Image (cartoon, rainbow, N blue to C red; front, side, top):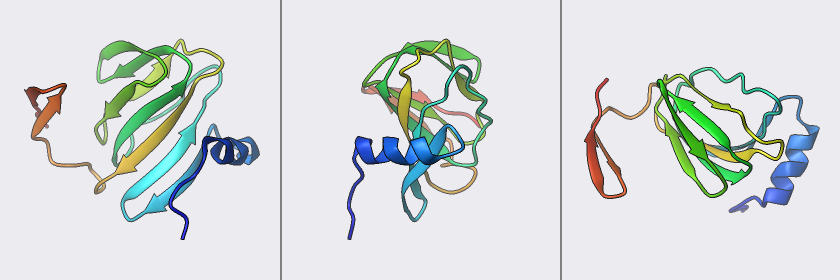
Length: 122
């Protein structure tokens, strides 16, 4: 049974891919990818909720009309169906992408960020 994937293994798989991403792990509704676009990010909204964990690089993350700077180690989120992409990112930009949950995403509810509660709407 394989319980993990190294960054080196994922980078090797990405080098062989024809897209700027490659799926490296899947179990049930959970899927993990390595994503490393170059020049411009052409993402469209996804069917599942997703989390980005920045491996390297920096830039600006756009999600639902808001922009925020990002760098290595940052965690970013996009709910299913939300417009989002990366802008002005460095040449070494790479992220782990985690997709999870049902198509359409989790039901909107309470979002807790650094201990602060935020009510989500549809």
